Image (cartoon, rainbow, N blue to C red; front, side, top):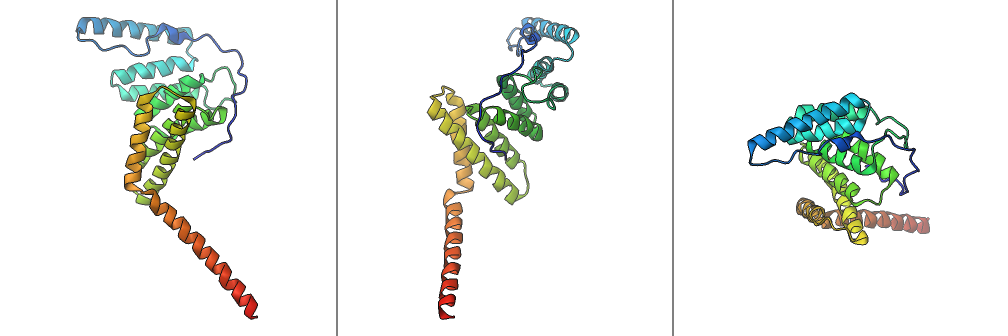
Length: 231
C-alpha cells in the first residue's frame, strides 16, 4: 500500500469544457414505466450527443458507465470505464485532460462496485499523491482492501489486506473528526468495518507478538553482554 507524503495538488492547467453537464448523472427510478422509459431515452440521446461532440473527453465515458451501472449493464459499464481511463491514466500530473479530484473519487466508487480493485488502487495512489488529507480517499482505500481481502482465499494474504484496510479506515475516521465532516454514513460504515476486522484479527494478538519480538531481541543482547564480560 502506498503511504505517500502529504501535499497539495499542483496548479492545474485550464480545463476543457465539461460536456457531462448535458447528461443526468443517473436516471432516477420511478414507479411510472412510461416516465422512466422517456427519461432513459433522453439520457441515451444526451450521451450520444456528448460522445459525438467530444469523443476524447474521459468524463463522457465515466458518465456513460454510471448510467450503465444504473441499468445493471455491468459489462458495458466496465468497458466504458476502461475507455475513460485510457484517455488520461498515463498523463503527467496536472494535465488538463485528467478529471477533477472529486470525479476520480466517483470513478473509484464505480471501479469498486465492479470489483476492479487493481484499477481502483491505481487511481487512489494518484489521488493520494495529489492530496492525502481527504476523508473519502482513505475510506475508499480501506473499503478496497477489505473487499479484496474478502475475496482472497489465502488466509495470510487476507490478514495482510485487512490490516491495511483497518489502518486506512482509522485514518478516515481521524480525518473525519478533525475536519468535522458531515458524511455520517461513511463514518458509520468505516466503524462497522473496523469492528468486523477487530473481531477476526484482535489487536492484542499483534501487539503481543511485537512485544515478544522486542523481549527476545533484548534478551539476546543481554546474553551477549554477559558473554563478553566472562571473556
